[in-house]
Image 1 (cartoon, rainbow, N blue to C red):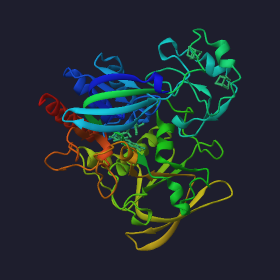
Image 2 (cartoon, helix red, strand yellow; image 1 turned 180 degrees about the horizontal axis):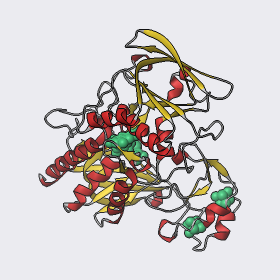
Image 3 (cartoon, rainbow, N blue to C red; image 1 turned 90 degrees about the horizontal axis):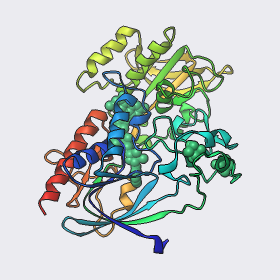
Image 4 (cartoon, rainbow, N blue to C red; image 1 turned 30 degrees about the vertical axis):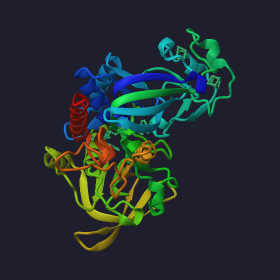
Length: 432
Ligand SMILES: Cc1cc2nc3c(=O)[nH]c(=O)nc-3n(C[C@H](O)[C@H](O)[C@H](O)COP(=O)(O)OP(=O)(O)OC[C@H]3O[C@@H](n4cnc5c(N)ncnc54)[C@H](O)[C@@H]3O)c2cc1C
Ligand code: SF4
Ligand code: SF4
């Protein structure tokens, strides 16, 4: 690879192109700074681009995200690398960082792909579709999802059999199996870490039966079933394809639970569950939806009204802690829980259960910063130098943090945090 090393110079390097990284890059570029936005996935947009609607307004998530992502993609001040990772960042002096970025091969020449999907149709290999959270399949030659940015095919080389069917049908001959990883040596004046969050893995609570009982889903799987770009035309039980009519939500799955290593509140699960419950009542008007909660934390603007609205629509709220979930022969699920108000153990039957999984830190940034290490807080989120007075500053001067990389937060707070990080970065850059 060494002889193919490319070099480039930017004012700022933004790591992670979710809503926080995208917003930070856009703010910087709109103020005349050049930005390299590095995203490890095949599309920018992070988790937000895959959501259904957003609380508490029920605006369509895709309708907000796609114009923003297209503005980011078209901005002359922003260079985007998808399918890429920052291998290391070293601070050389004030306002000068050196970074090594590896761009993985997509095996499709991005500029020539017309997204006609003929390769997808011709490819004989079917694997689980990670963008639909494994609810359906996709081909080894695939466009990540319909509103992906860039909307360009990629070849999943791990599963590809090199049969050549895609190459034969591609009208622009843009599939190229000789592509190799590219190494870039970048210099930048400031860095923004916007690497987002991970979702709690419900396999860590075996008594809830995720992975064992097919009709136990995560909230992200339900989010995909409710999104406009959803895999089916309605909400279906994965076990047998039946339309469910008695759905339960288990709040705080992997949050506020020291036994699974995550003692904190994830801040978003109450509200996204209340949102999904309202959307379910809309799309399945005959269905019963019950939310089992410890406390409902509707702390934000418009959140308490949103909670009241759900109650008004007929969503059941039970203050109950779920002990165990078991499966009946017909795929229905028995929830054993402690009714906290009545102080009694009870059981109830539902035909689908959604686990409202919590927010965990993404520790990707830990290995990136060499020589001067980036500090993390006691929960492994990126450490904020002063969470009250300057929440975007980290322990390294010139490195800022945006969005959920520093802790759980919703979309409006991620955007505000990106605003703070980009303003601090601009202030740092013009101090040269
Ligand atoms: C089920 C569910 C429903 C939700 N519903 C709502 C809602 O209705 N309203 C609301 O306000 N919020 C909602 N949220 C929360 C919302 O998703 C987050 O607030 C938002 O996505 C945070 O954006 P972010 O950019 O900080 O992180 P992310 O969306 O996680 O984006 C981070 C990006 O960084 C990339 N990345 C990570 N590591 C690297 C690396 N090493 N190199 C390069 N790139 C990297 C990732 O691939 C990703 O694209 C919901 C969350 C869930 C799970
Ligand atoms: S070469 Fe690979 S990606 Fe192309 S059609 Fe064959 S299996 Fe699919
Ligand atoms: S057939 Fe070629 S142009 Fe069409 S989507 Fe596939 S790679 Fe792109």
